[in-house]
Image (cartoon, rainbow, N blue to C red; front, side, top):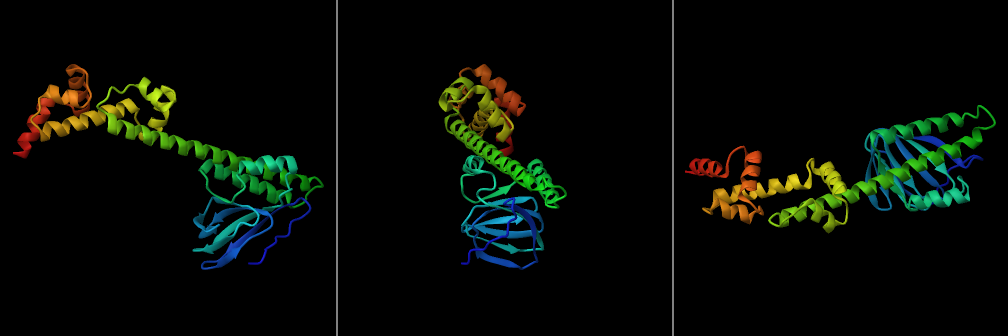
Length: 273
């Protein structure tokens, strides 16, 4: 592969547009500088260090030096390319920011708000490149700094969301396999090492109900199965699914199912017969 170089002006930051017609393929190559690619419109596929990503409107890609990449356009694809040298931000800023981006190429599927922020910054850089006054050459690095901050913060929020998703799934699995135990908000908090409020927030964000609301549904669904499939006494079923008192079981069953356990069993068995 040939080392492809992009001309950068004195500011060491340069924004330009690339047009890729349908079927066009830019084969594997790499650069000695950073690039941020922003898809204005169209559809394509980008291969980044042997990983394939969809590349379409509002997608962003950060390409670090010497990272092998290629682009294939599935429809006319318009891409803004922001090229900058490793020293464009100054050494102390460069080290902190680029470490925040983990020093490897990344693909971003931004939300609507972040995509809008990125578009505005790119517009500002395009305007400053018109050189309408002597200070223009100082503006592009400032806007680049702002753009990198957006990507770093997006990364951190995404990691936090991913971690919360994993916690929520672990919580659900814990309840699914231990619903018959004496599960409370307090012992969930102790088991997972996070506050009851935080547990409720992340679980509700993922599943639209609190862990204890989900627990009641799991218990009652299991009770419904036992009522239909067995001749066990109600009190035995109440015990088996984790309720300490019959009154709590009856009250919860009525709230969720809309009838008593006895009536539910009678109706279901009559429908089977």
